[in-house]
Length: 293
Image (cartoon, rainbow, N blue to C red; front, side, top):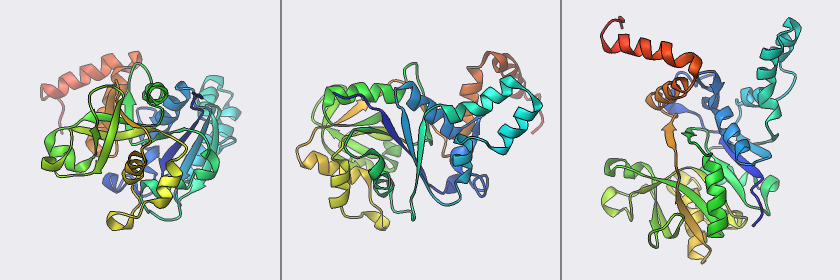
């Protein structure tokens, strides 16, 4: 089966759960230590063999195009200073992959956002990455899904076990039986816990087969008039196409919420030798009540 070479990254959301921080700054540009969230998503994609990334943006997200573009004001300033090491860091995001940008003209659901990228990825399988979900793992999550796609022969959805009280916040998969990847007989968008077919919740990583756009076209809008990707995937299942869930290896942080972003920053910082010791010392003082609030 052909290698996955393209990815779509959804970055059109308003980031209302992170206001007022996201009033003027795209949520995808919020920092985790020294890099914006969306750069972690791009680095994961590139480490998984992705060569071209399509960003689906909304108005007001120009900071993303500037971050991954060339000849920014910051780059010019650093170049004039003659700091080669810093210049390499500033240029690094621009050189990770080939980038394309499309505009979602209105908030109409995830499936609608995916459809905005159709002309740039149609005819081949592609990865779908939500920057809000920062996943740290020894092997990139997208690379794991690419292998699962080869085994499944159709769309693959990253899943993880979720607590009963959290089930109504997730899309929940209904596997035919055990296995990893596990073929699905259905999906349900945010069911009550008592009606959920499993405790496996969908997270923000997918490999989508080429037929997904046909199913998005034929799927009616759901709640609030939004087009849900879960419904399009359920349509693939109903058509007899293989759709699988894959329980990935790694640790996910929901950085779309303040606590998740904070914990992600701590986890990344603790993995940096230059930050770990002093951070642990400071946390120790906090735990002893030695730092005023």
